[in-house]
Image (spheres, rainbow, N blue to C red):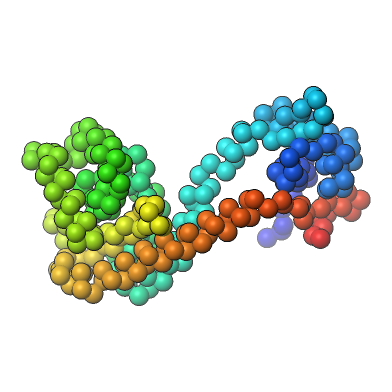
Length: 282
């Protein structure tokens, strides 16, 4: 397949954004010198960013600076990034070891969102789900595990949402005292389990902590005829807990490294050779 020719104007904008991000205010000349742009081109790119709201020119010193709007460009990145870079390698290895499908889910409003699953790689998956599936807080092992191990104020707020959502649990199950008793038991044993009897499938989930921060849950689905709860607790639970602990520890290291990198001034490494019209890496 032929390589797609890059859009030069877009490359210029990205380079200029990188320069702006690395310094507390830049002039047109600063940008032109940093990425080898003609001053007129640097000026046009900077003014375009100002028009779009991503930068502003300070009339007092003619320096351009980024605005808070630029943060919108990274909305959702951190969540996706740590799942991909931190959790996915651990879960892939866990899935190969346990064979049963495993997944990671994070809280999203009144439910849990599956962020990654090994369903496609597991020969034992009764059904193959993709990332993006939403799970209820009260009627799923992942949701119950997250509720049980959430800080008390967050748990109370989530229960308010779940109980007001109309239809997750009926009758006695809607009574808050009974729910709290169930969650207390989950905290005691260290995991939640949900059995869908009509499908012969069970799901168990454990929490993922990074320090005191609850990130989400690691879950495993299995056929209840092949794996009873006692077998799960003895044979599979330790591996799920170890995977959750590894994700939590790696997340802390990943976040620390990311934060340090964000504090360091960034020097653009990409350059455009305007004569040859090709990218040159320095």
